[in-house]
Length: 312
Image 1 (spheres, rainbow, N blue to C red):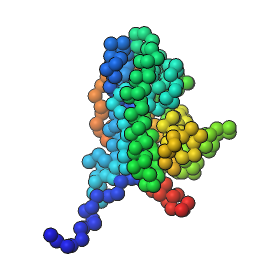
Image 2: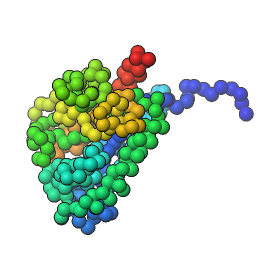
Image 3: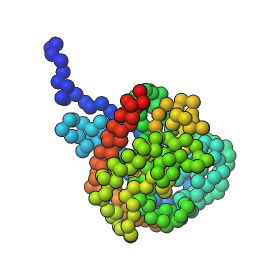
Image 4: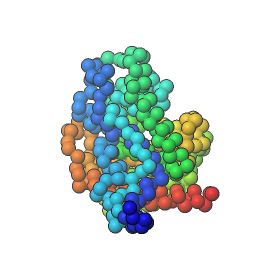
């Protein structure tokens, strides 16, 4: 056996100091509700974060560079269950909200089931599909406590706001970055603490602006901003639960900072509606989005690393 030190130039690069949550990419239907499901395959397709597992794949072979393989994240937590049925980015006790943990309406206002689910049925879905996601989140953050500088909650959004959401039909930016704050990333008046420093969210927005400014929607229908901070979404339950300092954070909330990111599906799917047909993914467009997202994540991870070093 050789005693020669390994060639560092060929060693795998260190993972990005982030944990990724990808909660809405699944298409799966829990077996418990198959017979009572009213949603069609098309309804579920138009409600999910299409191909999020692909364009947030920061370990994809196509991202390899001169330094070797792509860095990837410390951990990635996802689920194959459709968000139109069980939404892990909602509070566990929000049982009667049509857009809560267990849905009764799609984002386009289509009834989810042929009849109302009973409370025991809802609790079964929570136990079998919702709670395991959060156990995996807790395990990932516990495993990488001290190494995780950023929790990145990864989503995508329809080009225009769906019918059952606020501001139905309103155009959305190419990228939304959220920390529970206002349009500058600052804490809202009377609001809870933000999940990352405002200047870091603004810097992350500037990076995204530069990376996505050259991309256009597949079906443009008017000018839209490249980046919106906390618009149209200020962030959801996942970043609230797992970021240190949040009022309702989990006891094991170890992430010192978190950002929710949303990518406009108009970049790689088109201008969806409730009746958009089920279609195969667009590999070229997904690859273009993935390359920019990966570059964004690398640069943002560096921002958070420098901020942690300055604070230390």
